[in-house]
Length: 251
Image 1 (cartoon, rainbow, N blue to C red):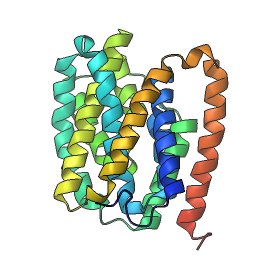
Image 2: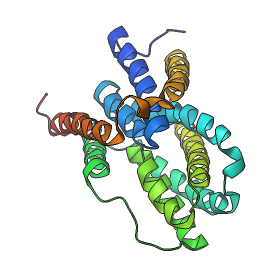
Image 3: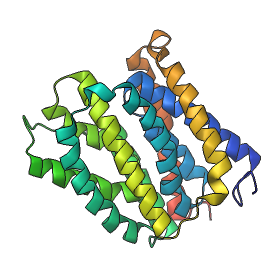
Image 4: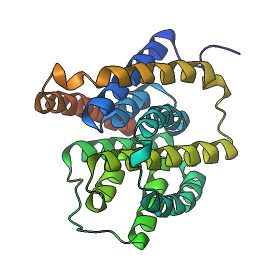
């Protein structure tokens, strides 16, 4: 088995490992943002068909660790409804995602990243019914097959009906674990080959684990406000790069 997948340089692999580490540190320190950071860089390096499946595996590893830490705070009644919708959403979304042209996928990724950074993500609902949770699970699972990093959207759905922060983070983590697991399964059944990526994936997941440990001390070094401003600037530049790539400027 080759260490690296085809057409991926050692430098590109090193960058992905480093960003997997940084992304996990961001998520551990700030709650969200690491998934979008990793997705943005991955989309600039990896072949378009590999972006969402590989992102799903790395984020699965990151969320498993967080879910295990907060496992006793997880609200399972909310999780069940969310997962029911997710099962339907990944099946529908997966069958479409693999057929998208590279430039369309990159365009969707870039637009989502810009919206996640600059757009309104909060909902004004005071409570959410089981039906709404199920539909939200379906919708977020459907779009995660195209854009991958739906963590900010999912947590905005869960926040109005979970008042305790530990319960919110634990429930959010386990919802993302299940959604990423379903996504990986569907992409595998639809023919995506994870085999060439396995050695690199193992290293990225390990790097993500150490990033999570570092992230617990992140807020002691840089204020959250300053860090988020820097993160916005970097992600905006990378998203613009994706837009240019999708438009054919580099081709």
